[in-house]
Length: 193
Image 1 (tube, rainbow, N blue to C red):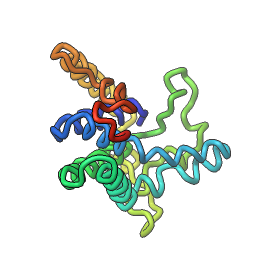
Image 2: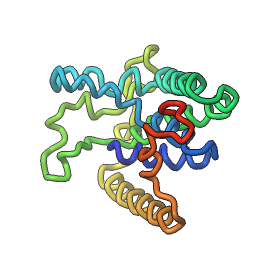
Image 3: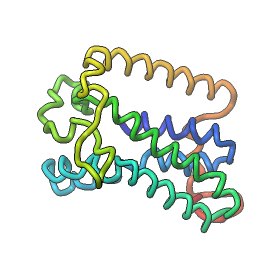
């Protein structure tokens, strides 16, 4: 899945938390952080294929990311509100894992006609959901549950629904991108969260 999809999923989950802009940013951050392992791309595609969708895309990794973001929230903001935020942060990281379960030989280059399989099958074959207990990769598509054609149609439908949600939010006077426009400047000056 792409970062925009993860961002929008995190944003809408954060809105449901009703914990304000700081809560929206924290949950959105949790929805994006599992892809921190993309840093392996600096060392080349082989390193990326070894690292991506392993530890940070596991249930244990999702829980650790949510706890770390919540602890950061408690230190920078409000300890009492952090307890309310933790389940939403867990949902944010789990949304990332769930969306990546639908990935099947997808890459940003595939929209330009470049075969995604050139990136390497290890990178595309799902997520290591039960790492460190198992290095088996899981995906709804590679399990034979869904075809590539179905996934293409499903992604178009989901994208259309997301765009509809963004337009609906904008008409109400709120905008999903607003959560990060105030990332560094809080009215009370208590840090980034």
